[in-house]
Image 1 (tube, rainbow, N blue to C red):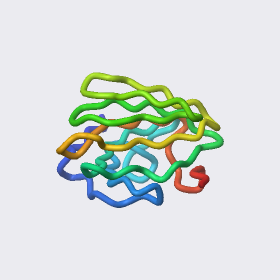
Image 2: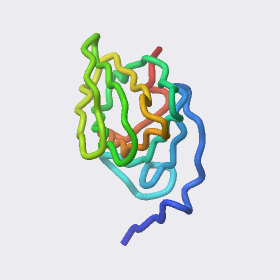
Image 3: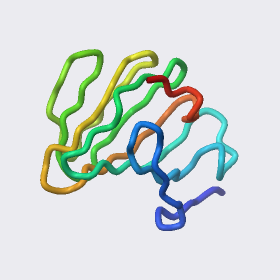
Image 4: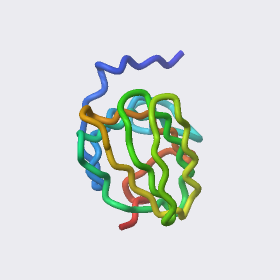
Length: 118
């Protein structure tokens, strides 16, 4: 059985500028087909616009408010929203509220920095 506590996951900053806590991925569990991370974007900040050639992503907003942009289309997002980001789709998210934006990010296949293109 694989169980990882959020507080045991060391945060790090990715090339897109978000602070990530890898909850379950290739670095800490015998994951074969997906990964799960928590991302935090500080109030007023954005991720660098990028895409993934291989990974499909799903964002699930757990705190804060934001503006999601995928391939030029923008929509406000907030707590409880789930967002599909297909492979190859250019995307960025901005924390628009007064507090950090926090989201869960599921990737299939598992997230890898070498699959992030700017």
